[in-house]
Length: 282
Ligand code: GUN
Image (cartoon, rainbow, N blue to C red; front, side, top):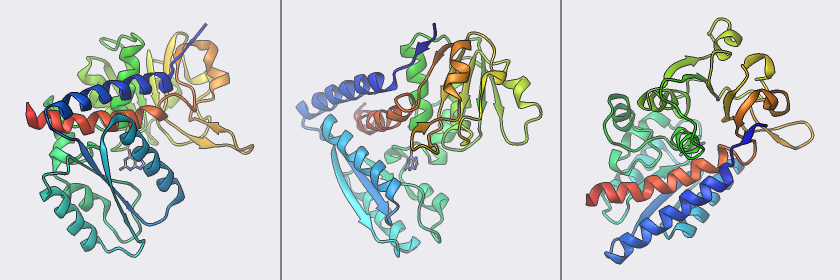
């Protein structure tokens, strides 16, 4: 019997832990405040941003909303970020992606003060992760490490295969697994014989963005499968990058979709908000 890794449960535990840390800071007269910036009216982004604000409320973190029209220029957005960087009452800055066409996302991310970069996207934070220094870490991969640890999945010495090399998930995921002493392979669209490489994995992290792409022919017996994908299929149901029904009997543990990796991203964002303040007061 495989173990279903319950991301909903673990994310609630993490949010409760954050809530306690926020309360402890509050006792010392220190509040935690996140600036949430949304540009345009992308419906999915609106849902994500609302969920992030709700999580802030639950944890006792102040959220300050900045909702800008689709017509906002890059210069205007950069000006807002500068204002938020300079505002000592703001601890974290989250700019929801994707940004409207015509705004250079990279330029925007690079404009955020790395100490307030609660998404962990700034190259200074990515670089810190790469060389083993402390910094803010991208939320989804950080959440996956928490899931593995809290389910007592050993990483040290294990064959870890990451499918996908995005800056937000694949690359930081590989660095985090390496930090935990895993033997890490990163696969991508040009990988030759993906199946054979994936089959080596003791821990397989899938972030390719293709619904139900990974079936039982990609995994060996006893593998731990982490599914980062989220898609809505023909009948309106949510599914991941992994064909859950096909692989589940070969796995020793697996994340479901929904309720696996998804809820962890926001929980780790809350963790990064409080960490941004704790880092300052250390
Ligand atoms: N859009 C999709 N995922 C994310 C995320 O983790 N952070 C931000 N800022 N935007 C996103």
